[in-house]
Image (cartoon, rainbow, N blue to C red):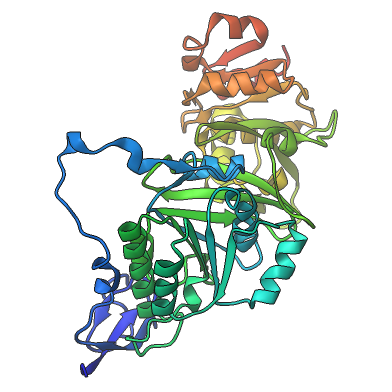
Length: 455
């Protein structure tokens, strides 16, 4: 029997050391080195490698059939995956507890089960619990096999015997490889079990979905190397107080990493939100100061979001600044630019920014919208509800060009907006027909943008 050795592994970055450190030499985090027992022989990565024979192939001899995709018929899910499920791929779906990871996979089984054999491996729920959840989600396919098991070796044997077309592992933190003495959910177990499933997916040509939990900091529980092993990493985002969920692609070897899918959590499971822009701007107040609409790009999709600003006299010596859904430091920078370059003073005013619907605007194109909402609240003057604005604001008060301008304007036109304030340098790239269909106001500076509101 191989002799076990003691190593210390960082739970954040996966750094290994034969001795304990208070501070990880790899990532610099404190108190993250955990003791693990490892065997000096028997590598788990060879467990599945024997099941497939690799051949050297010329590039011109490889056909594109190896990337044939399986469609889930959940359009928002397929969009984030890059057009569907790729054969032999390993996909990690992560998110907060109860956000909808298992729900969306079980819902996808209803459509996938019409033409595919699916193996659902659960290490957290019994077969009866999964059946109850399937009844609530109206999943009735006969091609769904349930396996309550945590032993990776036993799961691999079942995969070889049943030969399913798709495998779902829920969750990776409950899986155990017996050759490793550490407990389930440890860094070593998570990494080695994922490695085994990766070899199974590649060797047998079966797409495997792995559900992963997140820690208190929002990162995937386990070493960062886990994200490097898998082909695709999807994050479920959402606030507890909102029913909307955003599925975001963080890594994708078979598609774009900027796409998002929007869902609404209901009593019958997750429902697709086909038109997120309409959902985000619905219920806008009319003739109210401090509100303006932004258009940001999420992958190839333009999304409209309402930005609300509130400026009021401070009751303290230092004005308060608060931002929800928009970067706090960038908000402070915009206030400084408004004071220095436009003559709007906030030195004795509290300022608040909120993006309605739980959206997070990380794109600089939202700068102009935030600035307009702050000034609108400061002057108690409403921005017309048919106006949309976007553009990056520089420190000199200039409005800089943004990408995908035509797509943004087209989305605004489709949703009924009549006037669009854009950066001057984007105006020439717009089509003539678009300039006819909607009023375009190109601006060079913040002052020009404020003047355009009165025209």
